[in-house]
Length: 500
Image (cartoon, rainbow, N blue to C red; front, side, top):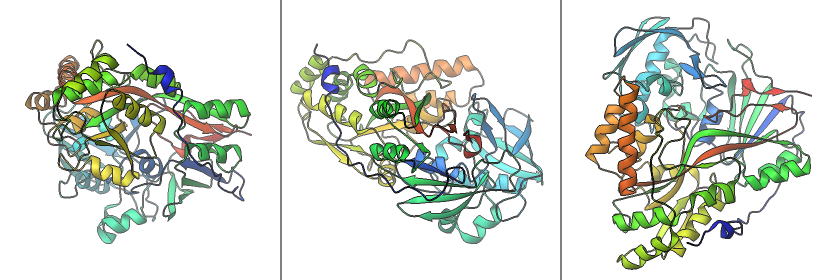
């Protein structure tokens, strides 16, 4: 077999690097973060892609959260008690105010739960929370949550449940709230210059740890090389989603530093199994065999990424040891494609600037070397999301993606991507559905792992999705920045310090 690893090193992604002008502020006063794109939403119940989440997570508090070690800890809920397998009573903080000065109560918490679980609201996050059947404010500081049977991933999902003010949302409506969100978090929304940046101001009345910076700006800078140029010019303080080449550039320049951490995020090649030629099992098998995962992880990325044989990472509860995926075999893949009618039908590979285009181009080259006809289609993240979660009739034939639920439980990745009820899924498999349903209801960890083992094996047997690698998160930071990357890739401004 001929390995692609040496070929991969020669793939070059050409991009124009134009550094943004230096801000006329000291970084202590204004902390500048460069993201690949602007948020698609600032309403926390609408989207949770990284460019949105990284911004709004600082505006809103959640029911519970994870500390930097990954442990689930109280936030708006100070404590909780199980009344039964299906009911939990939460004690709510009584010292929290929203940014408009009104008091946060259990009524706001119950409203937030019911809003995101309302099918009519149509949140893309619904699949994470649809086992919740009710939320009731018992009094101003107590809320009881009810689930449809036992739901072991509940707390892993609740770390993403942001609390919004009922009165404001009901008064202004969904669209206006998205344009001017009101939360209770450590930073207040100030302004959103579309296509350019979002500005947040420190919440001086915050009940918890206050941020070190009076203001923070999240800028949309699609080109990763430009994000590094901004950092090295002193025009930004934190650059997100970099690659190994840019890490080497930062380290060799002596301007700034690289921060790298393993994540729960899994990179994969998504396929719409209802669209030709992906509806042919032989074609999907050839695709699985044509992709050199080790070459991508070690030859291109080289920042600690690890090839995975399943749609989960070792950071997930639900990772199963010993799962086998089709081996890399370029010759066999080519043989299958050449002998399968229609396998060379032209296909567009959907991607977005947030993803490392060196990887996307490598996948294109590998599949074309196998005899397929793959053309890359680039689109912005909002349009990418619209297509990817649009159901079987809309989901593109092939797309590169990296998924993180921010929950470190396999339910948060497997259920939305594989269950037939999800808008993200083109898969209709009763056995997979049944195993996923069992895994999200069983209180036995052994039973859950056995269910996930069955899911992983069935996915690989039919190559319904091609798992690629456990992603690392790579930041560039100013030397004075003290920041610890976490598996769920959260950027909490009030956990970042500036050390002169």
